[in-house]
Image 1 (cartoon, rainbow, N blue to C red):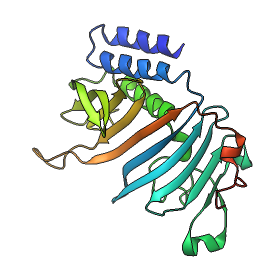
Image 2: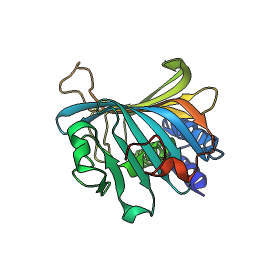
Image 3: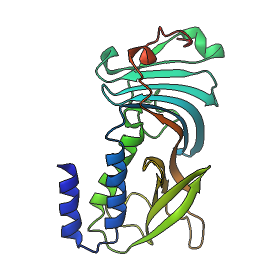
Image 4: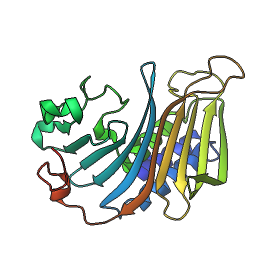
Amino acid sequence: AEDERIATAIRIGGTSHALAPGLRLAVESRRALDSVNDYSASFYKEEMVGKKRVNHQLTLKMRETPFSVYLKFENPHKGREVIFIAEKNGGKMLAHGTGIEAIVGTLELDPSSDRALEESRSPITNIGMRKLLELTIAQWNTELNIPDVKVRYFPNAKVANVECRVFESSYAQKHKGVKFHMTRLYVDKETSFPVRVEQFDFPAKTGAQPPIVEQYTYLDVKPNTGLGDIDFDVKTPGYDF
């Protein structure tokens, strides 16, 4: 039903709408995830949080149903761990730090609280490749009636050693309803998984490089490894909750 809605929106925007190929690529990628029940990955994110640029490298375990996330920080905050399971623990994420932070033990945090978002632009409920695609599809869908969009397609790009197809949209000037100056979706040629999305702000002045606002990257993705409840349990051996 969602794919039909997008197809209808593309037709309304025009059969040759510039964003149509990007939406089709995103839908193709989402379909590739339909058979993925769970996965582990190396997760990298670069974000502007307020006026601070934040970089994180994490180990991720992800299960689609029930929506479950395990994160282990590799750099910085090495050893910090976070678990979130939809409709469990009162909707709270469970987190602990290391060193002095470990003294307070495991914390229960609202995913949208200021404490949980100190170094992140989005709550843990938005994590994962499927969520990444859904947000990108929703963005491009709302931009179908925005004028002056410029698009580019790169059929032979790379993220690390992963060969990708990349669709890019950009706007020369700000418009109502346009959140980012430029958006790039990277899709793995072999698996069709979405391995990276980049969002850029408008340049401060003409000719300047647009600053990255968000960059989310999923590498070393291992799908359908059979992750179960034990992988999202604070009592799991090897976890330090």
